[in-house]
Image 1 (tube, rainbow, N blue to C red):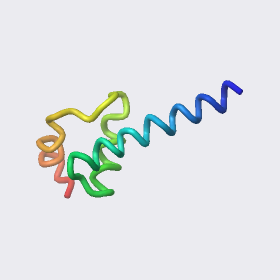
Image 2: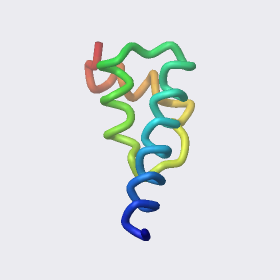
Image 3: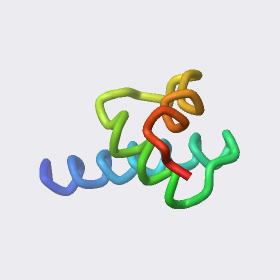
Length: 58
């Protein structure tokens, strides 16, 4: 039961980050990059667009 809840919580957190990325106007590739780069954060930072520009993520 604990494993199931852990997996469900991980899925919800990952989904929330993608929703946050899409709401900021990112496409799928950019959302995946941002979610991976900021996986220790609860939300994506406001400096996300500047970070993407510096890393040349289109």
